[in-house]
Image (cartoon, rainbow, N blue to C red):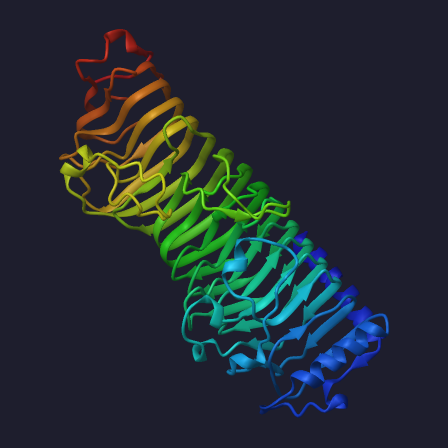
Length: 519
C-alpha cells in the first residue's frame, strides 16, 4: 500500500512539474562544468520560478558547482539522472544565515548548501546527486555547512535524489509540518557529525524506502526546541552507521509522541541499532517499533531516561531555559532479530524516582557475542544521571542480555537470547523494577553463571510459560529487602537444577510457586 501511494504521489508531482514552466539555470548563465561557480544562476532561476507563482527548476547534463541556495515556496528543484549539484569547497560561498526559529541547533552551524525557511510546497526530486564535498571542510561545527536545512516549512517533499559527502548533517528538518522523504539514498562518511536524516521538532513526517550509510546516526529524531516531534512514520529503510542506526534524542526538549517505525534493516553499526534516549526533558510517549532485522550491531536495544538537563532556547521570551525532568513511557518493540551484539548487553534504565514505564518487548530474538566473566554479574552499575547517553555508558552490564533498572510495567513476551561464546552472566537482571512480566522467556545459560534471571528489589513479577534450557545454575535468584510479590506459574522447570534462590533479607512469603513442572 505504501509503495502504491508513493508511486501515485510521484506521478502527480511529476505531471505537475512537467505541466508547469521549466527554469533552466543555463538560461541565467550557469556553465555546469563543475569548476565555475553557478550559485547566482541557479538562485536566479529559483527566484524567478517563485515570483511566477511556482514551477520547476531543472538541473540536467552537468555538474553545477554552488554555494548556498535558498529554496522558496512552490518551487520544485528537479535534478535529473546524471546531473550533480556540487557543493563549493570555499566556506565563503556559504553566507551566515540566522534563522528566526530558535533551537539548540543555533549552537551548531549557520551555513547550508540548500536552505529554506518558512516556505511551503517545496520539493527536491529526481535521480540526480547532491554532493557536499564534505571532506574539504575541517574544524568545529561553525565551519562545516549542513548539506540541506529546512526550517519551519510546510508540505515538503524529497524523493529519489542521492545525497553524498556532507560536511556535517545531511538532511535536517527543523519545526516542519507535512514532510515526505521517499526513496532517497544517503552516503556520507567523510567528516564528523555526518548524520543521515535529522527530524527535529517536526510534525507529520513520513520517511520511506530510504538507504542510508552515514558516519554519524543514520536516522535521528530530535527536539532541540520545546516543540515535540509528533506523528512520525519511518518504514522500509536500510540503515548503516558509524554511530546509531535509529535514535531518538539526544536532544529531547520537546519530546517524541506518536512515532511508528517498521520494516527496516540495520547493519554494521558502531553503537546501537535502536536507541531511545530522553535526557533533556520532554516526554517520550507512544513509540512503536516493529519488524526490524539487525546484523552486526554492537548495541542492540538501548532505552535511557536520564537527566543531563542541557539548557535550550525557547520560542517564548526569556532566552535559555532549563528543561524539567522528562518521562519515557508506552513503548512497544516487536518482531526484532539481531546478531553481532557485543558483550556490553542491552539496557532499559531510568533514574531513582523516575521510572521508564510501560515497555513491551515481544517476539525478540537477539544473539550476543558473549565471552564475559562471572564477576561482572556482581558489578555495581553507576547511575550516571548526567552522562551523555550511549548504549555503553555503563560499561559491560551485569547481564549479557538485558539489564533493567528504575522501571515499571516491563513485559518480555516470547524473547529469545543467546551467545556465540560462553558468557557467565545472567541473561536478565532487574533492579528496582515493579510489575515485571515474563512470558515464554527463553535464554541460553552458562554453567558458570549464578542464575538465568536475577530480580533485585523487584515488586510484582509474574513469570509464566517459561521453559529454560538445561542448566546447572539456578533459574531465578531474588534479592533485596524490597523484593516481594514474585509469582512463578505454569512454567516448565524440569531441566534446571535449582528453581529459586533467596538471599536472607527476602522472606519466603515474597515468592509464590504454582502449577510448575519441576525436576
